[in-house]
Length: 189
Image 1 (cartoon, rainbow, N blue to C red):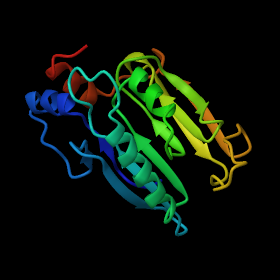
Image 2: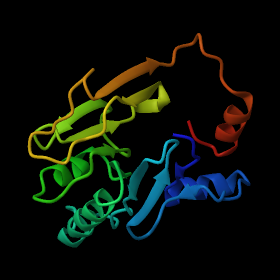
Image 3: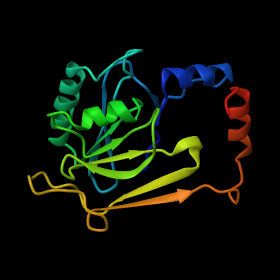
């Protein structure tokens, strides 16, 4: 996909502001659920849903938010080949979402507190759940080999319609000086 999109949480925005980094046009991180349609070469489109942060001290995912997500998924499926949702909720809340009786995205790109996942197949294989690993020690590549089918028999199957590759970032890969400088200026680990 040839686009620039970066999900930046409120906490990350504050850290970047501390490092004198001004927000860019391609940053997203809404306070409300946000939908985007991204065109690809060849005319296909991908629907993207950026989930808003949960309220501080939330104990569960609000039913109203699950309903909004479900409605957004159905809307985007009508005009796109793939629907991806992005979350910064953390493992437990994302897991709760994936057990909801709702229309869920084809792929959930999670983040926040919790374990990393190369690609769990949820909802009987219809939703692929991916989460980054701790401390940015790996990068995952996801290749869509065939578009999801919109029927009851569809499920993600490795090497048939999807391929997931995890690349470990070892000491053999040099730090980017600009990124390292930025991280150091934010006072983070």
